[in-house]
Length: 406
Ligand SMILES: Cc1cc2nc3c(=O)[nH]c(=O)nc-3n(C[C@H](O)[C@H](O)[C@H](O)COP(=O)(O)OP(=O)(O)OC[C@H]3O[C@@H](n4cnc5c(N)ncnc54)[C@H](O)[C@@H]3O)c2cc1C
Image (cartoon, rainbow, N blue to C red; front, side, top):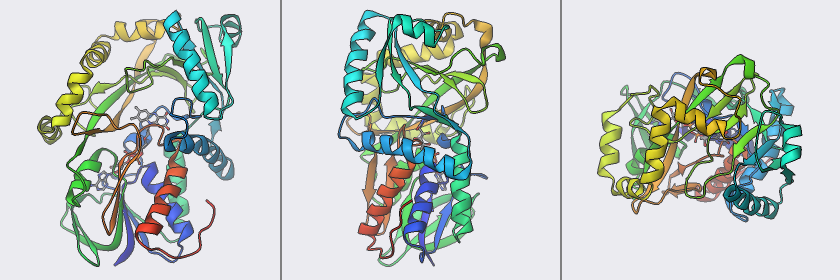
């Protein structure tokens, strides 16, 4: 029997595996990932931004984890020779309303202890000749990285120290007993483990329900579609360029992102997806749709966000509308510049009353811990999140052993 099993080979599961192993080296730890490789979902399909933590409520866990996560991600990349670039980010206001929102955001960033400064229109033109705006907020420490590469490096460190990772291991059923947790894999194999941590992204609600701690929330998948800009635009920006977020929308808005591969993407939007882990434009999954339709929180969230949802759907359907959103701050872009790029799907937890969960959501049973919601910037914050889970596991599972720094 394994001492601890972790379900989920995304960045949260793998960072947690490594962190628990470093703190409790005597434990046998196994990671189960249903896909043939690690990081195939949210972790490998995102903007690759190392966020600084501007947007989050001062004093919140999300704000603290993000600030610490930036420093830890940079340190991890330096230690292991992984490419990253702290190219900085500009949040650009294009009208008077956005200028007011930018002032509020500046105040929030400062209350979060971040090194940011306002930029006037003339300086914005100097910093970014291809970007137009009335003003901006500069976050010099925001950066970019390849989160798949980070996850793979963490996985290597984990297995080199004796950890086991099994891909192609789809956990279909969990039974929690008094002394053991039994895991039934989809191919019929049965594994047992003394304890379990679940970091299953888009499947989090289903695995939580198997352990009796779900039901009051469900995962609603929101697709984020990107375009890659034509190579002539590889140097169109020096910083990451973000719009001022609309406080009525749950996500950050379409941004211009320099990527580690040397190209620039624009995106992501946020459209309701009819499948949790299929990425084609018209992909559907009957079970995902049925589960969504049965959950009252889905209909309440849909009702509350209908105008925003319809706008996003229209922007997704009509490329020209998508383009117009980018042209507000980058007018030189043309329709022919928008090349295809893989989308991602956000695993968004929604409560029964229709509230979208913006923070981490963690549930526990005597032998299991479930990370039920790990929204953006959970890739940036993966190392502090992993430490938090390690501490929760140490307490809940009465683990004893040396605790080392990550
Ligand atoms: C479009 C988009 C843009 C984003 N941009 C950023 C960004 O720029 N910066 C940032 O910090 N964050 C960003 N995020 C958020 C970030 O990517 C996620 O918060 C983070 O990757 C979550 O990691 P995870 O390990 O929890 O989930 P995942 O990476 O989704 O991993 C969960 C894993 O669990 C596995 N699994 C599920 N069920 C089972 C089962 N039954 N048995 C075995 N395995 C199972 C899945 O196959 C999957 O590999 C973005 C997300 C999206 C979608």
